[in-house]
Length: 149
Image (cartoon, rainbow, N blue to C red):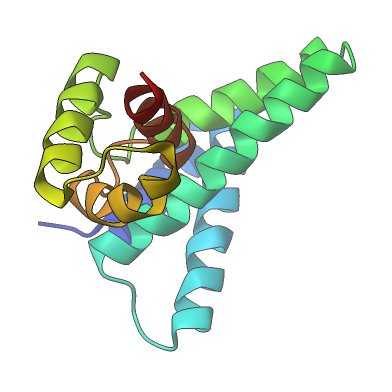
């Protein structure tokens, strides 16, 4: 079974052959991001490391979309949304809010946290459990909500 990086490179080749310029350009950005992550790591990326790199790229796209919308630049926001949808196709299925909330409850019970000051105590084990399937910012919001309530 091909790695995520191999799949992206194969799809880049297919996009180039078919003349799909927007897809080609977005895939080139992903290849560059994975190459940068590989160089930084000093070795070939495994799928877990590739997922982390792609999550970083997805987070950047979400932030850009938000800023472009604030600046009323729908054209740029639309391009970022296209890239984000492409990136999400390579990431593991994201947890729903209900699934994430259930995992947060379990983790809170396991570590025995009971106050908002213990968010850090919960976040480490929680993020290990949801690796690649939930946004850390959203997980933090739910932990904060459950420990405050």
